[in-house]
Length: 228
Image 1 (cartoon, rainbow, N blue to C red):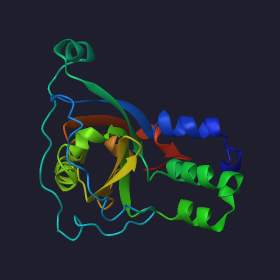
Image 2: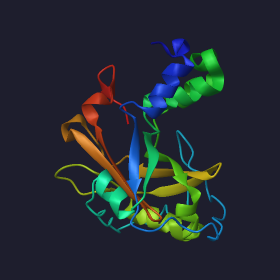
Image 3: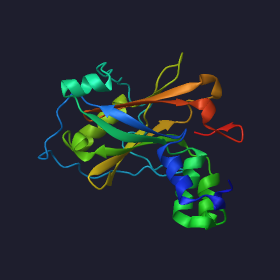
Image 4: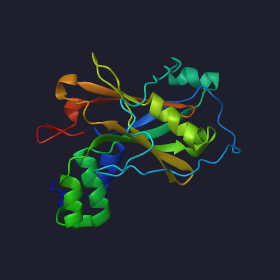
C-alpha cells in the first residue's frame, strides 16, 4: 500500500508482528528484582533518527569489546518448572524503511507522504542500525543503576551473522515508558549486512534479562531492497 493508505491496523501489525518486529520471550536466571532498586538516573544523550547525537560511548575507537554470556538452555516448560521467569518483549528494527514510515504515519496521519519533515525523515538513510527492545520491566534495569545497566547492554549487545565477527553496539539509550523501559541500541552501519548473510541474530543482556532474536533477511525486503 501507499503510505497514505495505511490504516491503524496496518501500523499495529507492522510494529508488533512483522519481519521487522518480533515478540520475544526474554529469560532471566535471577529472581525478579526488588522494587527498592536504585533509580535509573537520566537517559543521557538521546539516540536520534535518522541521524544520532553523540553519546558517551562514541569516539572510543572500535567500541565495546565484551561478549555476551549464553543463556541457560531451558525450554519454556522447563523454565516454568524451575521457577525461572520469562518476560515478553518486542524487538524492532527501528531504522528500517517500514518502521520509519510507520513512525511518520502515526505522527502525521495521511499527510505522512507529503509533509516535508516526514518526507525528509523517511528518505534520509540512517547513520546506524538501531534496534529497539520494547516492554522491558524497569526493575530489571534499575536494580543495576542507570550507568551500570547501560554498560551491561553496550558490552553484551551484538548482531551476529554466520562466518563473521559479531557487530557490537555503538550507543545505548533508555526511554521510560510507564513502568517499563524501551531500550534503543545503535550498531555501526559500516558493518554491512547483506542478503548473502541470510539471517542476523540480535542478542543482548538487559540487566538480568537476556534477549535473543533471529531476523530472516530475505523477508526484510521492500521492492527488492533489503531494509534495515
